[in-house]
Length: 381
Image (cartoon, rainbow, N blue to C red; front, side, top):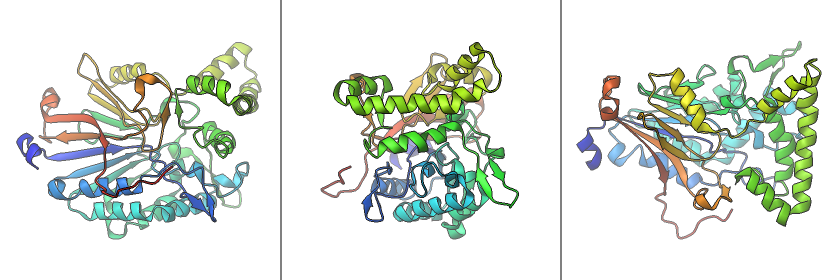
């Protein structure tokens, strides 16, 4: 690797998140509007590129930072059916996803078959059902003799691939999506296991998925306030129905929950406000993180689908790796956002560095994958 030889790179760390592979574009002969991932070929090329050629002899660690698979978007059972959260249903959903994206699974296996290539899988809120051991076993079984090169565990909520760099999905910052990976499985008296999801997962399956069947872009538009304004002007009836459904669902699921806890109205509204803290200001959260973790220099998250790279005056860095799903941004200041497949790339030149030499030993950046497939066409989504 010509450029890397100059820098004497000893290790490469790649971070991707929020790809949302689901049950495929077609189910039982019908178009599946819940499928958000349409970049199988680009991902296959990405995995091949970083395991061959210039990267063939360099250790490469791929960190899948949550929501790689999307169990919430698989129309396996009725949305309001509690069996959707059973271990049996979750296993069936996993098999549907793996079947729909065979090429990606094969590419992951080929990536792992190369020397010094490994994967760390951090569980997010859309692939939270990986807390079932049976799902881990089924997923890992697809990689045969190379399955030991994948780290997938309930204990992994954040990852430090090199000193000074911390990676976590980011759903932990939002009460609507936060859950305890170690205690998220409940068992009935008959021995059947169920995933106990955060209320945000119920919201996705009960509200978002329902309206996404009518407007496939419903969860892909940012900023939300611009989406609502645009909707009121140009799609009034649908937008009013959507807003009223959100209000009704929130009152029934969250307001009565806090009210029945015999709290004062002030406490109820305080709790409700915290519950609604979605897509928070990650800049302030980042400052809090570095204050609590002074040994860290870089924080990498996903979850919000909003790619960002911010370098602060003290040298600390915040990266959001964005998403590999199609996004629509109504903010003219980010007109090109939503058309790029973003990922973080970390180059380590001296694995045994001291923190005083972090800047000299570690290079961190946010990249976007342009692909190497030379087909003269691309699938229309």
